[in-house]
Length: 485
Ligand code: FUL
Ligand code: CA
Image 1 (cartoon, rainbow, N blue to C red):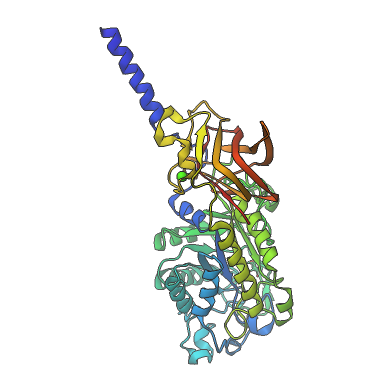
Image 2 (spheres, protein in one colour; image 1 turned 90 degrees about the vertical axis):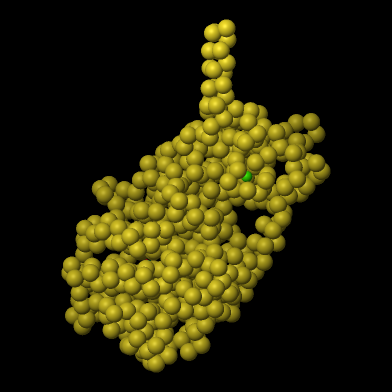
């Protein structure tokens, strides 16, 4: 009697164990990173005196009156971005030239000193409000290098920089991303000194102190730089993630020492580190044009819709986010050529991803965690990111069969891991049932928040099999989807 009771107790503990969610594996994302992953595509707006001087890097001695975007219309800009599927927008509130697009109290070098809107204009205010109206997140780029400030290179400048950040993070509502680039060219106007000022990238900015400030003012914002701490630069300005592209990364400085913004082994950034200790996902920044700022002569060199679509697969499709720069022109509007490409990109996304072909499929798996319905493979096709298929801890290479009921033709496959449990899968393969046997037609390595596989030729199948061919921990997959381009 006693032994039978013990036996029952033991059996129910083991069921309970199998019925509990898998333990996270390796580095895992924070809440703010999880929200950031969901955005997928965001827009960058490079806009300042450079737009009017035809430069990429202003020297810092520009007359504020040069900035005069007479027809500036933040709503018109943001409406185009929203239509293209952008879920956030990041503005160059201050680029290297030091001109501030909001009426800061830290320097006279700002929109307040320009005749644009008689000194009452505020680009940050207008864009943050327009973004809110169109349901886009709003973020800021504040260049650490300031070629206008007389204080640049001294400790006093850091006070200025942090006061500027404080204004931006206090007066304009919720900020989703704070962007710190790593450029530091040396020479500049510096309040009239016109000299070269060199700083030590590793120590001068005291980044941890600035990041603490961001955390205290906007705890939900992710911080971007070459080294994070939340989002990493992908290591190139072409918009292309590595393949594989792992979300974990332990950045190292170019010389092998500690890394800092502007000093990272950028060759390692596209792929990240498979077993890195920090969750530090990649963001792919790229401009729709050759330059970051608007130049008349580049109106004929705007990326085509096909190029944007290709970039989307090489960034978002590899689990990174795409940060696509679309610079306003001298009117303060997006250029018609850019609008045309963006519109076609948006149309493509709606047409392709609007209809998932597997929503009514029957799904069965070689293993389900504790045989529990809560972890069953039907979770892969329920359209809900929070539900997932999981296996028993010891099962690393399971497979799942998807029966579509009738033949479907598709050219894009989307697979998502439930990343709050870490990045567990190393490789997958896809097969279709064809005249009595399983025939492989695609494979992929890193999955993470999403992997898009774009087939060279469409595939037709009634039954498909997704095989996890290598994993570092039992797989936890949240969604599987098929689309026709
Ligand atoms: C770089 C800058 O030097 C470029 O002008 C541009 O802003 C790019 C996104 O970041 O560091
Ligand atoms: Ca699901």
